Image (cartoon, rainbow, N blue to C red):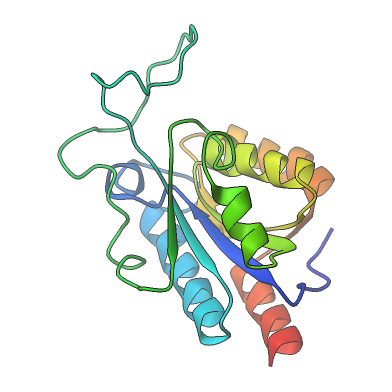
Length: 193
């Protein structure tokens, strides 16, 4: 479903746009392009006094906060020093919220839902990397928490073209509305002057 409207209290939620993830090879756009479109959206949200939430994944291998469970795939993210720092294009805005997660989705084990509800947020616009992992997990949880969900499909990327396409064409339309960053900016201008 195309973007039809944005609620008066809509938040931008950017998933895992951090040094070690943005540096990885992604499709259909490079991480830098997803960041640039997210930064444009973030500037527009800030200008209208709407919340911007920067979500990052982080865990120390010796702290016990790595998600449990048996998996066949190892993480494909470099964990060099500073890997979990939000990219400079998005960091450094005092009014933004930063949420640190230890799982794929941004709701489980964090205070994201509390922070959004305190601000009266009823809708979220999602961007980030990886489409089929952190973005999709967060979109599913947002839908389950009763938020209206809008997904900026050209402001997200994945390590797999097939996984990205599956999320965008099969999963996201069942969770909310999808559109480009430009379409969301137009809708933002219409509803929030």
